[in-house]
Length: 130
Image (spheres, rainbow, N blue to C red):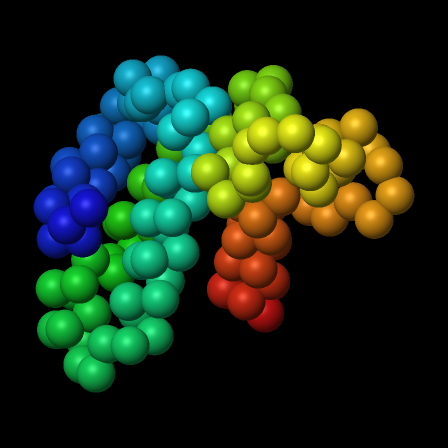
């Protein structure tokens, strides 16, 4: 996704949320389990762009404005309320026979968290809890 376009849309959505309230605006966000991974990817990309920006103007141009992050976090807040199995929405987990994801889904030994969960935890630990 073009981060400049994402930033422009996020600014408009943030303005709507400011005027009408976030509870009104969040109802119109897509809220399916398949939307979780792209939202997390955009949030990570927004934070990574901020790290690599040389100047403040460049950071704004790359779509790292706080409105972008606030809107993506607002969208994420509605997505995490949906009950679904993370293994089913994570594109990095291999599908097929009795692989590690199937063992992890059953809670078997040696189970690791799906990569999307690790990305969310890493983002929270590096950016929001640091």
